[in-house]
Amino acid sequence: MGEKGGIGGLVRVVRRTNKNGRGSAQPGGSSTRADVEPEPLLLTHDDDSVRRAAVGVGREAELETVLAARSTVQEVQLSADEVDAFRSQGFLAVPQMSSDAEIAVIRRIYDRLFEERAGEARGLYLETPQESHLKGEHRYPKVHQVYRLAPELLATGFMANARRVSCQLLSCDTEFLGGHAFRKPGRSPSHTPWHQDQAYHRHDLLFRNVNVWLALQETPVEAGTMEFVPGSHLPSRVFDHRRPGGHDDSSGLELADESELVDVVACPLHTGGATLHHSYMLHHTPPNATAEARRALIAIFGAPPQPRDDVAPFPWQKASSFRAEPGSGPRSKNVLTETP
Image (cartoon, rainbow, N blue to C red; front, side, top):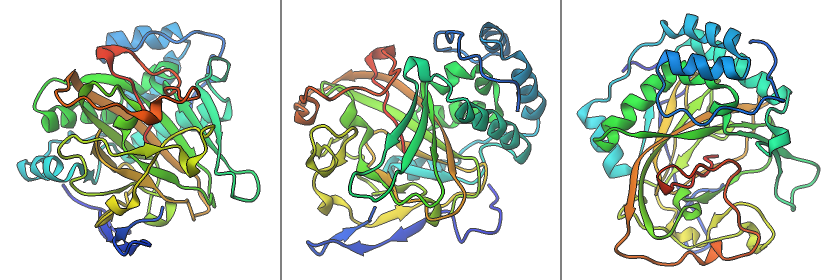
């Protein structure tokens, strides 16, 4: 797969030193019909099913714009080397998962959802406060269940490619598990803490999910792109987590022991590029130091989870304030989490 110019390479190794001396990384269309309850999560994305869902929430016009742009997207097939790299490293950067024309359509839909705070009445639109030690008001807007609120996004070429490569990576037919939209404002001083998605999930099940993180604009390292610890998804171990800063009333989770952060790799992306990461992968995003908001659209695919033989409790889930992400779906007993 070819690579556009402009960003110096798709991945960058970031080596820093923590206090223990080990490697570490610091961290359109018409308006949304907010009064219409979204359809249940679509498990198949054929055009007829998507059209019925879009009509049901009054978004047929948006669907037509998506279908008109879809033909500009090239099919993505991963090479054997790329599949092997994902399985050994736990992540992969794909140069192009959509097209410029389709990304323009997705962005219009995406920006309108945030302008209208889509799903706020149902708790699906959140403006998460950033860390309390940061001066000033810093908000991180998020739209959960984005594909229910805007089902036309299911008909994009991006989604077809995301499903195809997820099946390649897991060597099976995958289930669509939903997704989110995250908009980190420009000049945001906050970072998303290091964590594993599985720290939010059931401790007694073994999951195989692929999280696809699509960049809707040029996303250099300075914009707060995804960073990973290669190989940290093996052997499906969940590291100890805690509430950020040790505050029990804080939302989210963070890795408890930063000595695990060795040989960190950052993945800058061009517009329409994407990272794919395994659900046990240690990852985070640093602050957005650029002037432009960093837009990311996430789609999650997975195989049905299986019972774990080595069941261990997740004590960080026992706090009375712990809760799953808004709209987390029960499909296959899989509790969805957010990707930053």
